[in-house]
Length: 326
Image (cartoon, rainbow, N blue to C red; front, side):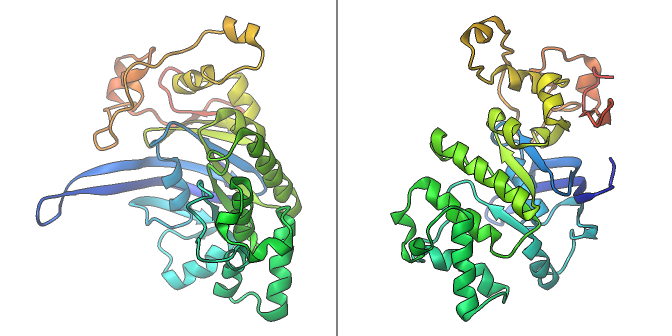
């Protein structure tokens, strides 16, 4: 894949979690949460990462931020290999990388005021103190459309949407280049989701941010993403520009996912053919041989059961991992 103008590059990334058993807690198996994936995120773009629950989306985001130490592969941020950086160097690097959590109810410390939550990164990284600290916290509140006077309140005094705005302000405090948005709207009401998505888009333009936007709602991803990557059981099966993916999905799994997205026009919705997948997602402890999707694929052939397909470019930066797509 091209490396020109990329902020993040992931090469052959693996993340295996040990399964321990017995009195001596010996490793008896591995959960292959991420199983050899490669992709890049260009500066200033939003890459959507979609797939079913448990496919490895969140683990991918946390590996990029080095909250998890990968089992294999390399991670490059702004040209620097951060895979094996020592903790001290990594902490300084993390000023450029932040995370917006999925659950605004669980991700805020209930014992801290909103102002302390937003301002804590400024203290940790030694960015501001005194009057400058207070002015910066007020500015961050205004950036996410909250009144600075609200900073004396505690998390339980805010609505879900307001709590997520506090989480966004906290992520912006250290002026990062890159933010992992881990399903930031999935726990919110539909009416509030649109407001948060619009806020994230405005902040991206104003502050020249780059996003990895993790979600399972394909309609939300289509709205906010420049490119979209589709994951299945620890593998990336398709990645391309947003419009191209939704208009011309090539992988059978992507086609099945998109067939389940509701269409506002009931006449068109009734006419389209829904692709139903058989069976359940296999266990990541013992994934199928060959293509991970082959037990559920309606088009699977013998080669799909024997050989793991490579992610290949079929033209116009449209990458697909499928033996049946040329």
